[in-house]
Image (cartoon, rainbow, N blue to C red; front, side, top):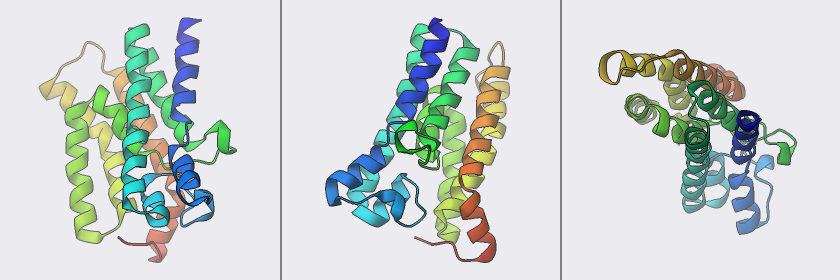
Amino acid sequence: MTRIIIVVVAYLIGSIPFGYLIVRRKIGADIRQTGSGGTGATNVSRRAGNAAGVLTLLLDAAKGSVAVLIAKTFAGDDWVIAAAAITALVGHIFPVWLGFRGGKGVATGVGIFLVLAPLALLCAGVVFVAIVALTRYVSLGSITAAILIPVFVWLQTVFVLPVFDLRPLLTAAIVGAALIVFAHRGNIKRLVSRTESQI
């Protein structure tokens, strides 16, 4: 029962729509009616300014970290921690409070892997920055970094920080990457058709 509660709490924490609330508070608008329709930091920045975007980024990352830290504190089971990580990400992308229409999961994923695999996250972050700097496509950087997270998680645990059982962490990385790529499906179509917005 405790494990189920932890997973449900992780989903509810992940589903807090900070971007939506910040834009609603600042300019009285529904962020879902702007740009990509997501509640994440990039869309918030375009609608309500860079300060609002940065605040959204920090809060979305924080909720990912908090969800995982709660699981680590009260469960101590690697599979429960992995499940909490996944459900926090699901909560962000499919929040119950907004009709299951949320953000793309990148910032929340950053918060999650900041706790679970910081070196892997750092490597993915370098890839993200490089791609965005070269192409000016935030979405392309996000998708590529997400796809590479499982690879970097594997490399981290094999060569740097060995763990007793890699399966839970790698499962969280693979499922998390799949969720983020799925959430970017509209961006992928626009990238292919060369209609995606650049920064």
